[in-house]
Image 1 (tube, rainbow, N blue to C red):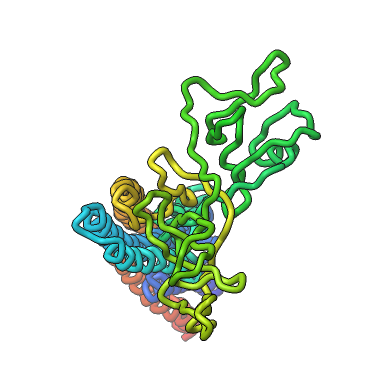
Image 2: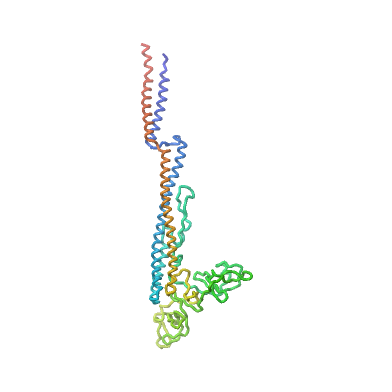
Length: 439
């Protein structure tokens, strides 16, 4: 009988080590919940699951981005809701002012509210913010909402300028002043006319910002968009097609936003003086009087103690009178800066209704655009959440442990470990059987 107890014990010990290691791995997986705890557990599975994890977290963040985008849109759209309400009130006032049951004084009071409402529209556009960014002043352009897990998965948003000027409903009226002797080179720079002699001078009408709005061709005035280059050498400014000429007052004054006419040697309180009248007809009323090179309202002047000259009752109440010639339309109404709302006359108020209608349409279009994008983002969020959920399930099948299966493996390894331990004990007791032969 050969004694091979050492070999038996070594074999049993090796098997015990294998089962112990298997049991340790099973315990690790059961305690962590992961099938892959290190690259050695499944190298390919680890790479795939990490890539999926990146996608899952990216999709989750993209969903949050889209939700933030909806919040931004709701902020802007909520402000435009109030702008809409203001425009509806302005339209109501314009309709009220366009009926001749109102006096000029009535319309002046209506104009005051129009001016305040227009100012509020601009204030809303300048102060509506999201995360310190202005939304309605025209600066929120070409912005991107990143709504995907990967590069370039975004959508672009732009919110137009919603100020009163942009909507062409700025309160009051800014008259367009006539300036003579404007150099053609300046016209080239502003309006793009080419091949003109820079030494040529031509009369032009400019708005308050210095932009040329009309030129005198021959003896008539035309809007700048009605002119083009022509003539034998294509170097003359000519009138397009059937363009209509504009009326230009030769001697106009602006007083409190209204066009008035200067009249010499009108009698006020028995004294001949220079006055401003609210028209050039016989029925025109005197609205201001010049006293010592300053203008005062008619009710703010009186005769001096000698009764031969006029003096101001309150010299601090000087009127701001802007002199010069101004552009007027065919009806004789002064043309204001583009988009100005003027309801001081029946004709102007009637035109204001259409201008405000256009502004309401513009705001409606902007709100519709924002609403459509919001609806799109809501669908985007649902899609992102669904994709993240499905990827999570896929990643779980690769990375997470099957608890039932691993419990079976753990039980198996545990039984084998106990059996190996028992066999190792038997192998260690085998040498004692040799003693039986020596007795």
